Image (cartoon, rainbow, N blue to C red; front, side, top):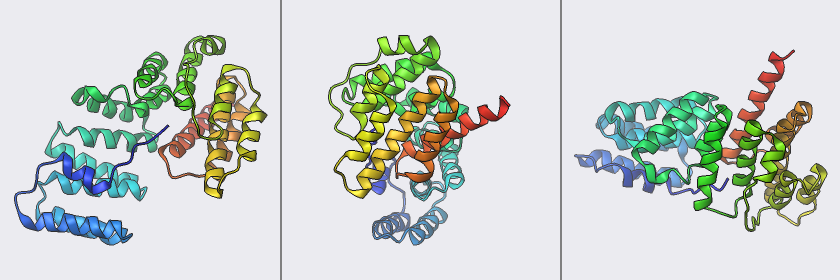
Length: 284
């Protein structure tokens, strides 16, 4: 999925009113500068000083939570977003970020609850909320997930991933053949190997063609790693929904262990692998 990334501090400062005193503002600005220079540990220290200076200022907790997110310190991030919501139970952005962190932690029900609270406060964000769609899929709410991904067409009609997750929801609810017949139409997704992934799900390409498309593309090493990640992720999900759990786990393991990327979708692959491995263990 395409993730819109805004500058950490800039987004943060737009969301919450200014603090009543200058000292926390100065510390917030200092933390921003340190983060941008790559001094991340020091940035967290400074934002913690800002929180101590004014513990009722939401901005400090949100900013530190965002920093913990970026550092993959998920428990700490959730604790900061919890504090935001203690101070203001209608602080929409904290629900949204906490929902993502809860999914990453494998807490699917909690993730969905937070995303739904966010959208109750920001209903205009519903069509673009693909993260909620993925959470719905893993919550087993396939019809709601289908509707979420249908709504995303209002945002982007060239995203193969949206069509694939819609397919997965329909396939789980009504079977693979129904999913193929109702697959969402898309334009052109320029990312390798996404169009071949689309062909696989609509039934006109073989799994090995997806890997060939990723392997043979003329890409930088970073781009090649990303292409292989998405190839293995969507092959894993394809094999899972078509009933081959062994191959599904092989591809999800490949995506997670050998082709890590700095994106929410890597965590989707990891959580999906853990869910599938857990189900396989229980069936033994």
